[in-house]
Image (cartoon, rainbow, N blue to C red):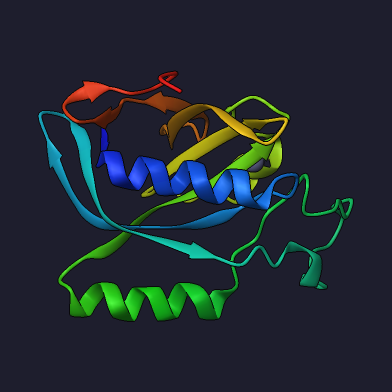
Amino acid sequence: MLTVSPLQLQSLKTHGEQTYNQECCGLLIGHSAFEDGIWKRTVQTIKPTPNVWHQQTDIPNIERFSTSRRYSIAPEDVLRAQKVARIQGCDIIGVYHSHPDHAAVPSDCDRQWAWPQYSYIILSVQQGIARDIRSWVLDEQGQFQPETLVVDGIDASHSL
Ligand SMILES: [Zn+2]
């Protein structure tokens, strides 16, 4: 279960629409707790980051798509966000990115690069307009499962 505020939801939509038709990406900073058998995460801050996929030169055996199909967050951006989060008593709890003209469903590449302890928000931006948002988490088999995305106390998956 991942909770974001209405304002944070709006800033995710805006980021995805402004960067269309490239994938946008960023970090979710906040708190997480394991309660009643599930991870409950609450976003405190949305941290947009540049998509540096096209700068990657050390990725073997993967076809190099453009940033309209792939995203990557620079390690230095992650470290910087981690430091700021620690000062605020928070942690990086997830990653978000957009899928221009594709569904809000993880790709094989998304799964390959995913970490088990993170929530993954995917925003579907169709023709420049944010149309769908979903959150995903890896299960013990390393497969993505949908995660309840809560905004204002209600399930906001598919709410756009
Ligand atoms: Zn993706």
